[in-house]
Figure 1: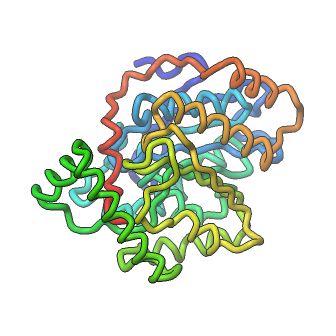
Figure 2: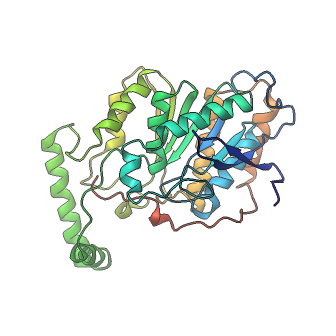
Length: 335
């Protein structure tokens, strides 16, 4: 079995007694210290987590591209499969989304960060989570001293409501395809928006209060956090859907003025961020954010990465890993 190719190398972690499989993307400069040597100050690793049941390559190999790009900037990047997912050991959960929302992967993510930081002589790790992966990232970030920052794509802070009936699914499909249905759906959204306005800033009844408490814990430490939000299904190319509670605005206010939270709305991206606009926007934002919060000792590393960004999207060979459709990432109904 080929264990390394280009700047990538397969790695295995203990994972609290469960063997985790992952991929290490070596940084562009070859002066990075070997495991066990002194760390380079202010250069954390970036750890990519699974989004629900997707393997560590993510939709359209987007995580592979982003990890390669991060390494090109000069930061070591790691993609791991959490227990029961992808190539890692462990039993697959029958209630995966519910268990993630309750913090199932908190301890194992924290242990993986510590093992990587120790093995590769890193001062800490930045956790990169998308959708359900952002939930696991927040839980681990609030409890681990090895976490130095968070990059969260389309994080959600609600608990899923009961699955919609087949009739509701057909009705939603008709509303998307019919001009009359679109009109009625927009009217319904405006009624919901009025109800939210009357409700004030309090989150809905299905808010994940446990996760919101973790958010308050992690932002109180003033860790740098980057939030990237894609348009809703009905709002491609515009602002978030009317009639939905705006959790991003809410959590930014909840963090307070002294926090180091940056929130960006990414027009043109879909929820997976795996389309061309989404991939490129993620690269632009994480490049600026990493260089701002974790500048490297010399200019050559960041300049090389930024030059690659300006020249166009990094081209990578996709891994021989099966990816799942974007809509399998997680259920975002019931915000």
